[in-house]
Amino acid sequence: MDSEKALIQGCIKGDRKAQKQLYDQFAGRMLVVAMRYSKSDLEAEDIIQEAFIKIFEKIKTFREEARLGFWIKRIVVNTALNHQRSKLYMFPMVDVQELNNISDGDFSLSNYHFKELLAFIKELPSGCQIIFNLYAIEGYSHQEIAKMLDISIGTSKSQYFRAKELLKARIGQEEQKSYERVR
Image (cartoon, rainbow, N blue to C red; front, side, top):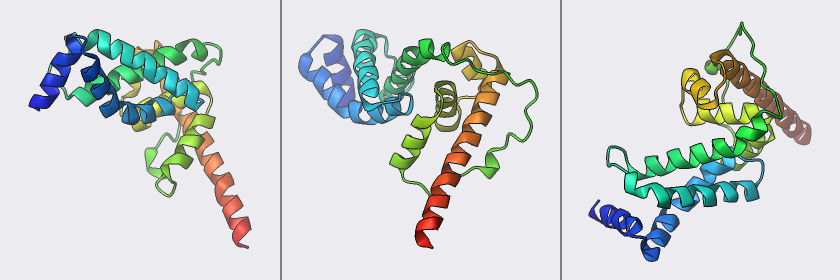
């Protein structure tokens, strides 16, 4: 923990070695986070670069109330959301007033490798992709998502429901292909 404090202090002072060490320590894990919110690897890399610029600018505001990794992840997620925000308005989100059958119990992705799941998630429409990531992966509530994205709670729920349905359909296609190969 003392080495983490020293690393943070070095970054606050603008020490390039400390900044490189912080980047090397967290960039790989944060790239995975950024990839979930982007449509391409290049876009995810842009998000990471922008996020680390913010991290180095704001590191003096880091309070040890949370783990450093959590604080960095929050900046990466917010940077990804800001990056995608303008695109959300190009693809309108539908607000469904009454949603039936929203249940996480009937939906499992555990039989798939991470790269396959990431590819499926990247295929989702932007609004669905962002809300699926925020709700199912990051663990935000629909109320928190609604505030973050300035949308209604119903819109968040409907986009999540739509994302699940699209993922189910996509997984069904893959399972059908596997079944046909076996026969």
